[in-house]
Image 1 (cartoon, rainbow, N blue to C red):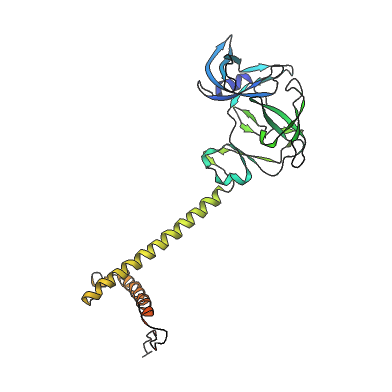
Image 2 (cartoon, rainbow, N blue to C red):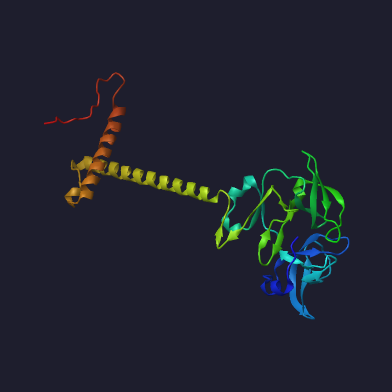
Length: 292
């Protein structure tokens, strides 16, 4: 777990009154647990920063006044407050999300022994280590040892655990490591320099663009054919065929007339085909002028 330097971190803390955050506890019986809280007030006392907090998952609980930076038995000073936990997805779900949801957590593959997890129990999340992983059976987990946790062993359902994350004002959300090893079952997608990096997002957007272009092209060709057929229906009444080159002597007008002629020929083929019986000797042949 990350500790933070008080003098450097305090000026850059992003939290505001009314914001929902997670608050760490080192109180005996709740050591290593994170609680969802709402900030009611921010103030300083004897040069130290305090938050007044309402615990959201404990009805009737009194308002708590928490010192934002606290020092414990390990001699380090710990930041007690962090943002709400980011959205968490399975690998199969990640392509359905919107990029603006970053940062987010992606769980892929299977949990492994040694992975760090937060266990949802009694209205808070307890930091723990996975001890055993057996198919179709609950995990066996061990809470962090004192003074950072209660150090007891429990069984936990997969649906009740989430990946353990660290947070600091300087680095944002990060994956912790145990003895230099980071979990191979978790990936963290973060927003960098205003750009959201979401696995599969670029490929999906490219496919959508190509589909839209194909649809637009098909619609344009269909509209052009319908327009030509409509013109031909009108021209049947007066015996005249209007040409674009009558109004303009440009190359584009001549090309457009040629395209309309091709469409007319196809239309005539389709029109003649259903009018002849199976025993008819009528046969349509393309006209081919002589080479002279």
